[in-house]
Length: 239
Length: 381
Image 1 (cartoon, one colour):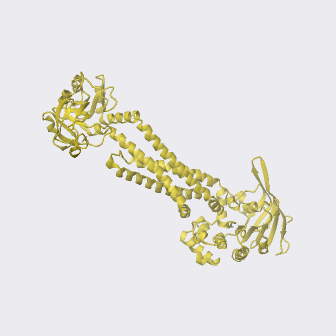
Image 2 (cartoon, chains in turn blue, brown):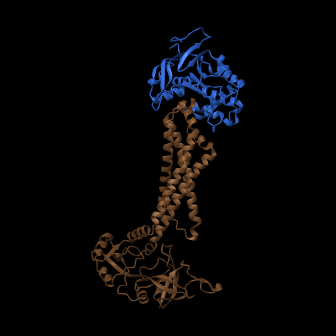
Image 3 (cartoon, one colour):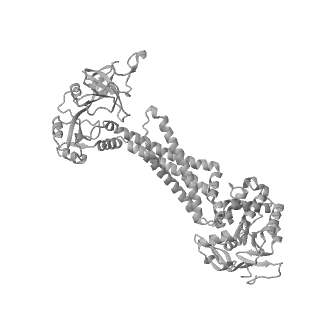
């Protein structure tokens, strides 16, 4: 098996609107090891969101190579791609994206239901996961009854409940205050990085940079440099 | 995931109720108006249906409907009796005459004269008196439910026309000797039944008096074939009761504009219901677009999205349809006592289900297309 859980090289992506082309990714090289938390940071419009969309298989790249655990989304049929995502990827969204009419436990159970697990079993697993993120008392609460931090913890529980190998987080702390944001990152680091799981976190919140094992700095559709404090100076493709 | 879909649907109660209300409104309008239309349509042929003796009705070839008075010569009766396959044929007079009621008021009545000998063509059920009472001198029988009010009497003496009253038909005094029951009709003039000869005696002198000939077929004879033989006599047309009923119904529905008016109302109900339900459902989907995007990102394929949305559409359609048809039935029951022409045969709820199902399907498909085209990446924007 590859040393890299996520490996992208020369990835380009262009959005065409009307007669105009916008170059979102201009040849991205980035790789993430199993058990690593990689942060993608940079100013708005630099291509972070496009890159995680490509990594998570919800957006097709134009050129280049990108494999997730050795699998290339582009080589899969749409159904296979959807199934692969459901089994292997967990998502934490900036706005949490919890279904407002489902309880916390039901929200957390959604990925298991997507993977066709029995509803009773899914709810049990969801409750266990909520216990792990410290929300054992809130299993029957609707999202509207939870604080922002609690909602993000529910979202984290939802991202992890089906034991995905890759967790993609889009600005997980931007809707939270500093203290809550740090708690959420502590939790992500404690709970998510088990069993060689990979975390890719998009953020421009400098306060949480310290949680990253490596930080890929992006600008204008390119990775400009990677801070790699641990382990030392491993990059690929010149970054 | 279907349970998740249902929870998404019922979670926003205002939108959920608006959706159900839109579909229920469409369903109510479609089924209620269709039922009233059917009620009117059935009333146009009620008299033919209730005169159930005849296998064939014979009339002047230009007659369009039951009260289209175009009479035949009396010789036609003998010619029809001579047609192969006819067991018997009896004459019927049908006309309008002015009647002076006991309080002095005047009103147009339909006078129906039936065969003196056999009394065939009489109404189906007597309430007071007997058919044979028609053989009494100057006897007529009236519809028990005609409710002819004698309102020129002083207030304390006002009452409905009743058995035992004497009235003047075209200056011929007659006595009401009995009453019969019959369902409501499209035409509103009250009816007096009497014998054929007495009806002609009371009517102004005309060369032709025979409006209808009621024909009974010999056993084993085919109605269509015998009708063709009668038609071959020339100048007449023979029809089964059902054919005559349909001809009358369509003539009245088309000529009075009832068909167009009710058709427009039903179509409007369909369109308004579709717009209300479609718009509400579409808004519901737009409001949930990010959630659907999140589900797609998390691994829900388009097939399952379609199933989820189909579940939502089916629940809304069935609930709305049930409420709408229920309300339509209640309306029909509530107003039946005041003469609402309301008939809901099974075809109307079935048709309503198809129409409402169509409305919801269109609304659902439009929304589904939106969700299916949705890029899951929308959740990252």
